[in-house]
View (tube, rainbow, N blue to C red):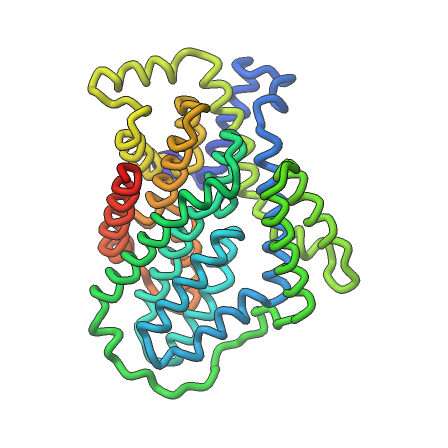
Length: 392
């Protein structure tokens, strides 16, 4: 998991997790009859439903339309960056941040190249803002959904606690990017006409986009009620499938089955590991060095480190086993620290990788070093803000 591959093979993290789950069952550590018990179906269902709602917005052209709207202020690079980061952060707080990056990157890359600007700072801003914005709610990213479901956290209370450090971290990220690319932002934008082939960009459909926006609004409203979140989201997602114009196959084709497989596999692996005493022995070992996860500062450090070693989802699955169910602040800190940690290095977040891979299609190279040069300081700024917020 730490390497993200097996040397000599083409297997990736999801494949590794799946093989781990198979090994747990085939060796009898996890009985086949326990597989369904091991998988947290409520988390999987919530993630699945929100992917359907996000797919509706993508096919309706809402993401493309939103990104194109920002390009109207392209001639003012700093304002353009601010608009991109604010929009990315806001949408990522309520929808899958990975899909936001997937839809925004081609539009931004094409417009920035046509305008003669260096696309790198803007694309880095997109990825970084999507990670930070997704920390603000318990539905902004997969690890927050997991924490929200397993910790039985209240949507409103979590958001009120998380929105301040998230907004401050976003402000710090914007300022740091502006400071490091001030020469780039002083360049004059040339007049341009679209030369890129936009056939692969979904056309904006006002009605289909409105359906997606209304569905998102209703789901968020229902999250403030006592109805289970997964049931609310699945019900609204089901209504979206009742369409006269969009094929269910097209919507379901945008489901990230890769991520769902990773989640299900990791649930089985962690269930197998926790069936023994290994995690507790490991926790007792690190306590000898004064590292107690009940200390929120220590939890922030361990979460950041582990999230960049094995990715934030498996890191969260491990760490939730040691959180106090009666102390919601620990769960809040884990959610924000594991999400902020995604900006540290390029492989720390799927959103980062999506932006980089999409940018390559437009001959834009974002190196590991360049990302780290911006990502590491921004992550440190974000974590310092979080630690101050904990103390306050």
